[in-house]
Amino acid sequence: MKVLVTGGTGFIGSHTVVELQKAGFEVVAMDNFENSAPSVIENIKTITGKNFHFYEADIRNKAALDKIFTDHSDIEAVIHFAAYKSVNESVEKPLAYYENNVGGTVNLVEVMQKHGVKNLVFSSSCTVYGDVSVDALPITEDSPVVKANSPYGNTKKICEELLYDTAKASTTRIVALRYFNPIGAHDSALIGELPNGVPNNLIPFVTQTAIGIREKLTVFGNDYPTRDGSCIRDFIHVVDLAKAHVKAIEYFDKSADSYSVFNIGTGTGNTVLEAIHAFEKVSSTKLNYQIGDRRPGDVVQIYASCDKAINVLGWQAERTLENSLETAWKWELHLKQLREQAVN
Ligand code: NAD
Ligand code: WQD
Image (cartoon, rainbow, N blue to C red; front, side):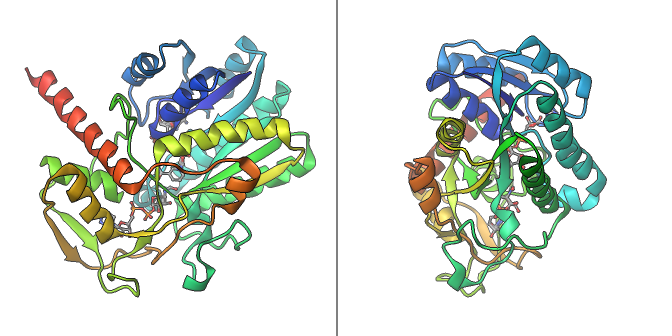
């Protein structure tokens, strides 16, 4: 079976291309390299020892999408990662986020429908649940989707809604995966996350501080009503997350559902301080961090109920937080090596 992966050289997309190939799928990937590098293509091929088709193309360009589906009339499913993902940037440039994330998704589904491709896996986010009360945890897929607290979050909510309406009105079938906090990198350290500028996310900031790119990490608040006062998140290894996409593609064959939503997390919440201490342990480093003010808009605590993914999708996270952090650190060390090679 042939699968198109949009955003295929990005953080989650690249790991998913690897897992799809490992599971025997033929892959066509596309990306415009706005937040990834062409070198990722060769690195994926080194990991899998297999070839895949690649297009440098933009999902906002319908003619470019049309060419991909014309060249590969046997594409049966699409996994749609291509989007902008910075919460802060989305506040400054909302229209760019709506144009790319919402407009790009509309384009993609229109071209899929033109070519008779029915199955789409969509990258959604636990951000759609907003700030949840502690008795709603672990959060299930039945929990209400609330008003988003950023334009980025709103693009995920709007895409889920427009995909739901489309699935009800047509033969298009959707699996929306709500990711919790993806971290880590491939064991080979050949692919991983490439944060653009100063990272907003915790783990890239942690590894960049440990390697000396950032002077110190600020923990945004230690006065929350949690076991150590810092926020709680469900950190999921990117390889586990990638494998969930393989299961989602396989699900199209097993189910007649037109629209399904799954939480993709570990089911365990860890505090920010626990993650920092686990990182110090696995990397044998002492992290320079300070406690700072709360970050406006932060959710206090959230972690997934994975029962639906386990029972219906047949998927469960396997990696530990320690392993996720170990691979994130290995990846940061690899990036350092690349920088040193570039200088010499
Ligand atoms: P990423 O930025 O590493 O990957 C996205 C890829 O899409 C990049 O390679 C980028 O160049 C490409 N892209 C962006 N706009 C494009 C366009 N118009 N045309 C073609 N390619 C385009 O991000 P990621 O972390 O891999 O995230 C993948 C998806 O998962 C996104 O939709 C994101 O919103 C969603 N998601 C991410 C997280 C997270 O924390 N990383 C959490 C929940 C959901
Ligand atoms: C995690 C925790 C911070 C940086 C964001 C998006 C969400 C989703 C995942 C895509 C929080 C704390 C962070 C730092 C810190 N993305 N932190 N110091 O906020 O859970 O979610 O990424 O869909 O939509 O909102 O992730 O990694 O930014 O923060 O103390 O320098 O780490 O306060 O408690 P978050 P994060």
